[in-house]
Image 1 (cartoon, helix red, strand yellow):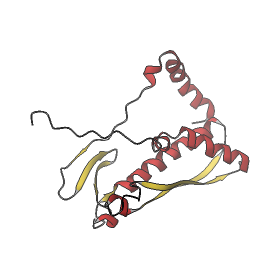
Image 2: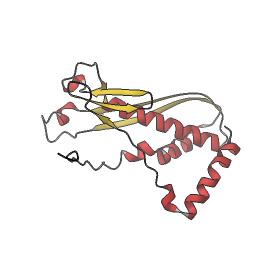
Image 3: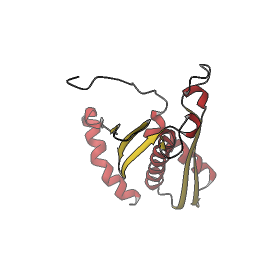
Image 4: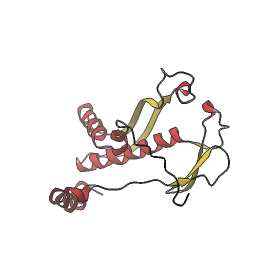
Length: 170
């Protein structure tokens, strides 16, 4: 897809959302359950079920996916798509790209060892290594636009609402 094709694909959506802002509100979701044994939750992902469990740092044995790593997967994917979209829209040629997302979580927080230690992933860095002819100023602008428009990255700034309810009929 080139810049013109991207603009053509997005133009009717932009017009619709300007005319009807509610139409832009788009549901994204993940679903899972406790179908597998142990302290796990199995999520039905795009590539099939993923069983998440405790990280080794919190008592797991390493055989299950770590939800923190899954968060970094989602962040790298979203930032990658966002950067590629911005680069395409700006007509920048990227011959090759490597993206990584890394963060740190302090297990003392999630294990309740210390209330002073935050629970969650901190010090998150998304890094892109690009094969491109773009200059440093252009790369900086690309980074800022990617940070601004990456849905997953922006979502990390606002904690989610957690609801716990009984199943119907219980």
